[in-house]
Every structure is written in C-alpha cells, then in structure tokens.
Amino acid sequence: MSAYQILYNKLVNNLNYSLDLKKLSYLKDLLEENKKFFVLGSGRTGYVCEFFSSVFNDNKPFSSFMIGDDYKIESLKEGLLLVASGSGETPYVTSRLRVVNKDVSVVSLTTKKDSTVARLSDEIIKIEDERPEKKEYDINGEVVKHLPLTFLGTSFELKLLMTLTAFNDYYFGHEKSIKTSYEKILDSLNFVQNEEKLDELTEHLINNKRNRIFITGHYQCGIVSNYIINRWKNLGFQLTNPKSAESPRMKENDLVIIISGSGQEYLSGEKGFEHYYYNHIYDICKRRKVRTALITSNLESILASKSDLVIPIKGREYSKRTPPKKSKDYLFELRTMLTEAVITHELARRMNVSESQMRENHSDFV
Image (cartoon, rainbow, N blue to C red; front, side, top):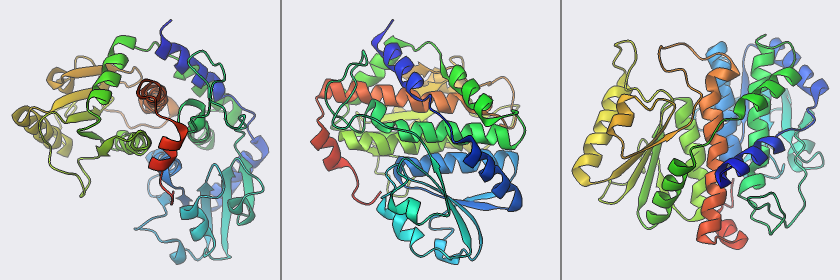
C-alpha cells in the first residue's frame, strides 16, 4: 500500500466521531421554521460553510446565504444564523457575532463549548476533535511532532464538512437519519489513490514554489479550489485563483491546476461560459509555456486531453448532466478535499516545513 493511501485511509478513519444527534435534530427543526438562513465562517472553515450553503441551495434554491460583503450581519434583524469555528475564537467570526441583532437565533458548530463563539450563541453543536497538543502524526500514524496545519490538524474542517453534508441528506429526506447518512459518506470516501500521479503533482508543486500557482474550478469545484489555495499558502506557495481580480499575469514556468469532476467544457451540446473560460486558460498556457494539471474523474475528457498532468479522483458521474442533490453527487469534491490534506502532509514533510513557519504564513484575522 502506498504512503499516500496509508495516510488517506487514516484520515478517513479519524473523521469518525460521536455526532450530537439531539442538537442536529433541533437544527433541522429550526431550519424548517425559517424560509431562509445565513451561515458564517472564516478561512477554510468559511469555505466549508460556503460549500454547505451551495449544496443546500441545490436542493432548495435561495434558502441559504453566506455572511460577507453581499450580506452584512448588521442587516440581519431576525431569523437563523449558523456559525462555524473550530477554536471558537476566530476574530472574523467573533467580531461579527458581537454586533448581531438579539432577535437572530445563533447556532454554532465548534470544538470548544467554553469559547467566545459558544458564549455568543443560543445553541452549541459540538464537533468532537480532541487531539494531543504539540503532536503530529506521521505516515504510519505514529506521534512525531506538531504540525497543526497538516493531516489531523485540519480534521475539524473535514469533520464539519462531512457533518453538514450528512445533515443535508437527512434534512431533505435522502436518508432516514443523520447518523446513517454520516456513516454512508465515510464509507463512500474510500477509494484507491493513484500514487504515481499524486507524487508527480507533489513534485510539480515543490518545483514551482518560486513561481506562481493558479488553482481554479467552477461552482462547488471553485469553492474547493479556494479552500486549497487558503491551505497551501501556509506552506509558503504563491497561489491565486485566476478568476480573482488580484490574479497576476501568467508567466513561463508557472503552474495552473484545474479542478473539474467531469473534465468537460460543456455537456449535452450546451456551451456554457466555462467552455470559453477554459479554452482561454489553455490558450494562454500554451502560448506562455505554463504547465497545466487537471484533477478530475474523467480521464477521457476534453480537458484531460489538453492537460500536461491528469490526477484521477473517482466520484463524478460525467456521462450526463444531472442536478446534484445527494451527498454521493458531491463525492468528487469531498474526496478531493481529503486528498489535498494528504498532499499537504507530504509537501510539509518533503520541504521540512516547521510548525513556526506554518504559523508565520497563517493569517492573524481568520
């Protein structure tokens, strides 16, 4: 079994925890009472919240909204606010909760029941994520030293992601209980990693550390790309999403990573904006000698044929266009986010990135 596979399996096993079924059932009742709700989170946790919001809206459009520039917390007069923070002390989150209207019901998901976020909430749903302090787990699961942003150091975000995805299935009646849904999701996460391709991507990233790395995708894949950008910046990489207004000009020897489950520019003869967007990216990469990598489920896709490196992650049904509804429809994105954690661990190991270095690259505000 490959090193990547061993670590991936251990990561999946770590996601198993005792869900607060009573509080999650209560959250279901609250959502049914409100025609819409708002979600608040920051950093990688914020991207998990955004992912959940988009998945919920796939089932019930215009029901969930992210707090941010478009929806300011000061404008909320009543309703439900769902908040997520692992530490419960995230400045971006606590500063907003301090000004939320008293008629807004606040439900927080956190590991700390005695945190600031918990004290500012009406209800607390605990995500159990107890780990020995000052310790990190190597490829065999042995305790070595503490690298908080690698492997188990990001398990809160992943447990939150799986919990909210399972909750979505439970809420919309795709599963009879959230416990059953959670267990099925964990079972579905298991798949055989392509060690050769993952190793090649890892080497590309290390070799490109002094150059720019662009990561992009659409819809939920776009959220995943931003999650990964946020994560790998802690390792010292120069990362950006080419759709961002702050994205720099691509130059020779840069690297572009595209995340697309289907790997298709368009399906069923429909040319969406992604057809022109991806064509534009590949044209620029070809002219400026920029390498391209594609993470996809479809090795025979149009984008795969254009890419220098293709990393297969099974999970997306790409033969036809079907609206995502259940957790299995997002399996590609879920597996990609877990695979990122494995790659991050291997990058930190090979580059000898220390805890202090990662902390220096981590934001003070999120």
